[in-house]
Image (cartoon, rainbow, N blue to C red; front, top):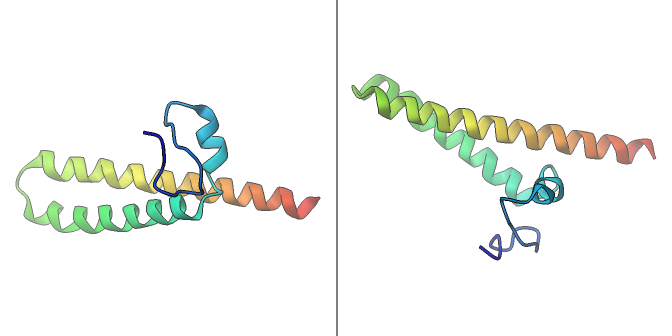
Length: 89
C-alpha cells in the first residue's frame, strides 16, 4: 500500500499516526469519500432494516453507517479547527 490513489499526492499508511494528522480535515477527496460513504451506508441500512429478516445484515449496515458518520464528523471538526487557527493568525 504505497499510494492512496492520488489522494492529496501523498502516501497512505494506515498504521502511522502522522497519516491522520496530515489528512484529517485537509484532504478534500477523503472528506468527499467519507460523505459519500455516509450517504450510501445509511441509504442501504434503511431499506434493509425493513426488508431483511436477517438481523446480522442490518446490524452490520448500521455499524458501517455509524463508522462513516463518525469519520465525516471527525473530518468536519478537524477542518473547522484548522480554518479557525488560520483565521486567528
